[in-house]
Image (cartoon, rainbow, N blue to C red):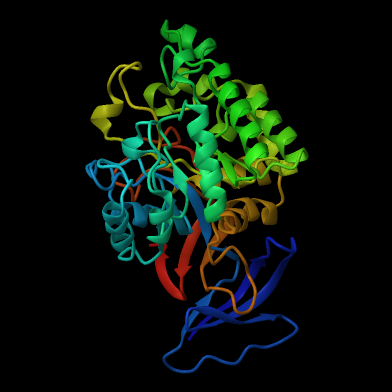
Length: 426
């Protein structure tokens, strides 16, 4: 049995913060004892964690992660990615399917899920919408759903054929699975990863205009309303995109949106200052876009915070701005950036932050977790809210982060999954 004593519980569903002890057995929260009550005393052989000064929240859930396995394991693999997730407080991970080979068949899906079981946390995987991510023919979505697919996405490559997108939504709806879309029209992009504005001018390139995202979000929010499917707009970056999602929700669409920590933290100025370490798809845009994303998180237009954890090697990121791959790692800095940018600046309460980083993602994907109540899975993160740490070394194989050297609040002391301590600071 595991006892966690003297901590402050964050309940994302009620919005409460309160002092309590937890009694955990057989992988579940057996009892929650507020300070007016008493849990049973520990006996020899029980494990006790003194959480005085620590916050206790449901384990975090990230529904947009790249572990590069199979095919690009020099950047990351499922085991190293699992270590990064645990260090970041995550107990639920949903992987993207743009590996090599892609996850478009039962054999690759089985490989990913079996290897995920070795991490000590819950690893799920989306599968591709189209075969070989070619955007021409849908995968056998029904078979892949039966084999354990969490959802469907061709993340990394937009699907341009509208009839194919509509059919994918219709089939995903029948299967009760979300379908997620990377919204960037390549026909409008001269150079990806850099906003077609001040940053592109600085590098003397054409860049990626905001309309590349807006046009596909406009199409897919309309199709979501038409089909009734659970549709996720991935890593939203434009204020117009946020407004399109807001309007679609008001009209009754089952539409969802992700915000990444980098999009609510940085602007195109970072791409100028940090170069390829701040190159990502879609790109960092303007301050008005960053604030629109924050407002979307605050009013619920944007449901989830997802990292788009995208490891790359140092050699790849040292290439010229137009040749280096897009993307940054994010699992180990996500909670801290949410605390600094959203909670400490008054945009979200701490329970609201946890709701968007745990409860809402679990709810959308039907994952057990995201709650703090008796009988719930004992998937937890314990962290010191105001204690600071400096971004230096990573559990990830890669270190392509624009936040290296920064001091951030929110030191994670423990990650617990199924009642087992899977990460302990130090």
